[in-house]
Image 1: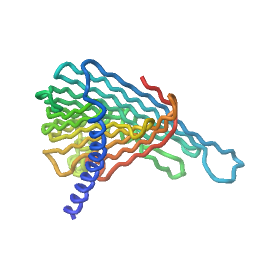
Image 2: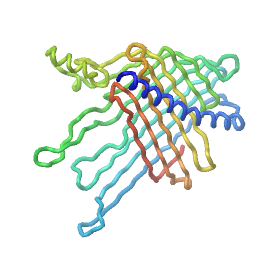
Image 3: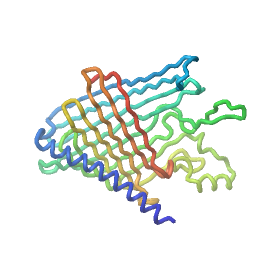
Image 4: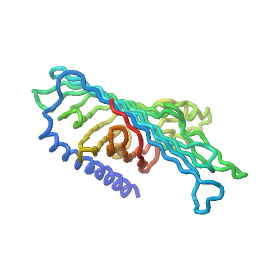
Length: 316
């Protein structure tokens, strides 16, 4: 049974890599004809958008439906520096969304992401290749819950995560290929990964049987009983490709792969995000977001998120 499962995981990994490489090659051809590379000095760019939807029905409405609302705030900001044969690329991503229907007691999160990426590079012989060192920090900003009902049919919720728990840090040396600020790949064969969690979720006490059962079940995001941190050492790949399909339509692709040398290296962690932005005018855009995550320390299945909305946007 184990071999087919591993084979399926490998096929899924290869599928996501193939999809990204397709977008990557299209962008590479486009960049080859439109942009020679980054110029010296700082390059800064930011974008903030607010998507909102709402539906309301009165008590006499017979066509079906439930009053609801949803909102999503997205912020992206880049600050890149080039000085001679040195480059320093920094990117901030913030994404938070909520939704609620009239018959729900509690508001639910639809997205919650806070991420910082930083890559320092030293150019090799005036080429597109750099010696590099990278840092990635990824977490969430508010608590997460599992929802259910009590014996009386009232909605209940159980806290499963907290703000900044879990939090992930990856860092290590590697090699960077960079065509422009919108097209690069960084490979690090010696990546240290740290997973930090709140001790409230791992505090099992001194009962050895309970400790063994907790650890045998995989712990909490891989962190073992009575600990608040897990260390891993492996290899990572980080890639970014952003290009225009048409004058008012752009696609952004972000891919992160990680393999832990110390435990099940064949189980490659995947985090892929695709953002499609369709500009209606200077202030209004339609956004489509797709994210797929595979991390067997969290759940042994793909986590998929899709979002579509129209809202206000501001570039700076």
